[in-house]
Each structure stands twice: as C-alpha cells, then as structure tokens.
Length: 370
Image (cartoon, rainbow, N blue to C red):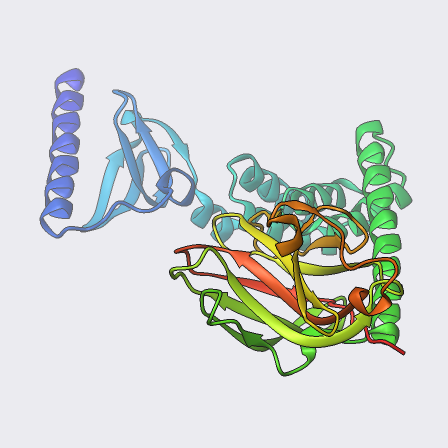
C-alpha cells in the first residue's frame, strides 16, 4: 500500500514537473543563467532534479517555489537538497566571520568570481587580528584578475604581516614585489626621459611649410601637418599621401641649401601604417646647375604606430646620375669643386607606381650652410 502510494506521488511529481516545463516552453521563459549555482537544486530518489527556490524543508515535506506556483514534495522522495547562491545569501549571518568566509570560498570554487570577491572583502572586514584566511583568499582572487595584481600585493603583505608562512604564497609575494619594483624603476626612467624630451624637443623640416610635389616627373602627392603625442611631447609630423599614376614614384621636395662636406649624411624617422612595404629613396640637386643625384631605395616595412629610422650617406659612391648613365655608381659632386657638393634641393621619393598610401615623416634635420 505504501509503495503504491509512493509510486502514485512520484507520478504526480513527474506530471507537475512536466506541466511546469510545458508551461515554461509555452510562455518562452528562458532557463536561468548558471542556475546550478544561483538556484537551489532538489534531487529526488529517482534521480530527477528540480531547479527552484526552497521555501521550507521539514521532516515531512519540502516546499519549493516553481515558476507557476508552490509545489510540496514528500520528504521521503527527496534524496538531497543543494542550496544555491540566492538562498545561501538569504540565510547568511553577515556578522559571522566563519560563515561569510565559507560562502566566499564556495563562490570561488564555483567560479562566481564577482560574488567571491565581494564576500572575501566582507570577511576581511570581520577578520580577527590573529587570522589571515580571508586576506589570503582576497589576495588570490585579486591576483587572478587581469590588471589587479597591485591590489593583490597589498593583501599578500597583510598575510605576511599577520604571520602567514605558506612558502608558495610568500614566493608569489616576492615575485610581485620584484615586478613592481622594476615597474616603478621603469616608470621613473620614462618620466625622466619624458622631461628630457620636453626640454630638448626641436622640430625639424617636417614642421616647415613650402613642401611641393613634382608633377612633371613623379606621381601626385598631397601633404599636411599632423600633431602626435610622443614621450610627453606634442610633436608635428609630415603626413604624406602618395597617389598612383603613370610614373614609377611619387616625390615630395623642398629647397634647402647645405654642404655635404659639413653634413655627410641625412637620416629621419618614417612610419608606414599601410599593409604593404614601401620603397623610399632620397634625391638631391646640387651646385649652380642643379645636378640630379638619386640614392638606392630603402624598404620601409608596414608597422602600424612604429617609427623606423632610415639614413642616406652623401659620401657613398652608389648614387645614380646622368654622368653614371643612371647606374648606381656615382659620387655626389667633385672634390675640386665645393659648389658641386652643395645641396640646393631635397627630394624624398616613394616608389609606388599605381599604389596609393600614407607615410609619416619626422625628425628631418634642418641642415643649412653657415
């Protein structure tokens, strides 16, 4: 008789559960997020589970709150009850250090990290002076969060100062202290470098006006000044957009007079934010007749946000000119004619053919003859 009654009750429970599921599906009620942790779990003797809120549990009956009302389950049919976070928080004595710490650990074990961190902080506020379990949990939870290691370091130090002696924990404390010492030293060096950069900053030719293109012999370029912030300094750079066309290269140029005997090389910074490399060369016109010389190309790789320094040697013998039949075997000017070694015009060339792109130039030295 009893077994038949239990069987009937079990069938009724299954019917109630099935009805609840059907109603939930009919109303399109979504399953609770992470319900195994947030809600209570009632496991029956036959293995079925209910995810619900336990209202009351006595020796005879377990009352649960389902989406469509309360359901009473005979206690004899319930194998176990596992309280979720909501019920545990509702029953928590917030002034009980051991209870708060235990719930913080329970949350941590289930990867409820925000709740674990909040409860660990509350446990730390309650922690007696001779204890260090809460402060250790708080340190570890913060240490596991990206970007919060400095906060974790503070609590690891509290752990040590309260007498904590776990070797692995103290090793982690030492590791963080060394890391932040290095960080502070690097920050101090950076601040000194920034201060020096501000003090010594001087704009070059890139900040000047009167840059021009060379439409007769080269593809079109357009240019503008841009301000970039680098090492604490607002720096003016030359932004050049080169356009494709019928020529092999695009050119930007400006008049400048200086002697290569006094300035035997020229270097500047270049940034290439495009997806492909760009070949760059330097050309000069020298002497009273504006004799043309062009360097070999330098390949500038595509590196977004990265500056690369390129250099051209005016004293090398691999410039090309009309005198070398446009082969890279010429020297600029002649030793017996200083005027032939006096630059009158600078050209920076981008070997783009049909491509369009952007480069940034900086730190072009403002050479001039005395």
